[in-house]
Amino acid sequence: MNNQYESMEELLASDDWLTPSEPFWYRGKNGFKRKDHLRQHIRNYHHIKDVRINEDEPDSYDCPFEGCDRVGVNGFSDKKLMKLHLKKDHISPFQCPQPGCNRIGTNGWQRQIDMLKHMKKAHATSQ
Image 1: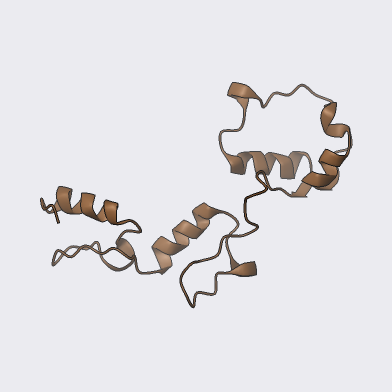
Image 2: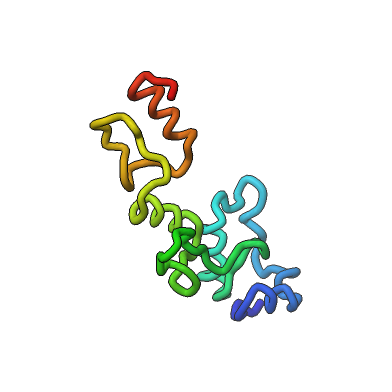
C-alpha cells in the first residue's frame, strides 16, 4: 500500500484503502475516541496533509468578535482553540452583577445559563 497521498480524496479515489496491508485495529471499541487523534493518525501514519474527517467541517474557525484579526488564515484549526481564545482574549457576554465578585471581564461566561447557575450557587440568588 502506498502511504503517500496529498488528500483524503486522493486516497479514497485509489483502491489502497480497500485492501489494507495490516488489520484494522482502530475500529469499534479500539476506535479513536477523539477526532483530533484520528486526524493526527491520518496525517502522521498515512502522510495525508489535508485531513478533514467531516466534509461539513470548516477549514478554519473564525473569531465571531467584530474587529478581531483571528479570521481566515489567522483563524483557528479547531473549535476548542477558538473557544480558548474567546475566554482568554475577549470580555465575556455574561458578567456577574454581584458587587465584588471576580466573575467579570474575561472571567465571565459565554452562556447565560452558566451565569445563572453561578448566581444561585455562589450568591444564593435566583436572578
